Image 1 (cartoon, rainbow, N blue to C red):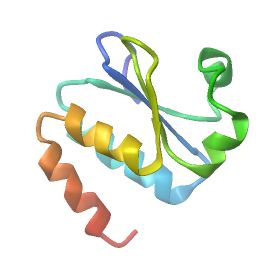
Image 2 (cartoon, one colour):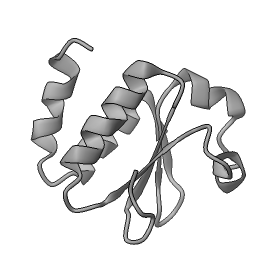
Image 3 (cartoon, rainbow, N blue to C red):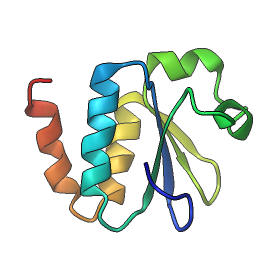
Length: 100
């Protein structure tokens, strides 16, 4: 959903999950400074690119990887990192109050 150039975080979500896909689309719209690379876990090369993430983790929760050092977060911790990365991160919090 975004170009990998200049991104700070890679957000990896389950592209088969409608809730995850909808969340990824909303986050991409809020990423006006293009600090996030947002990719479905089913994309070619994702597992080879992040070999330390167990294959089962992609189906269990959202994964976020920091570009500078490979530090990885999952689930709620991943969401917190996304919110911090977005300049208008406080706006993202409304996403979790809306019905999907």
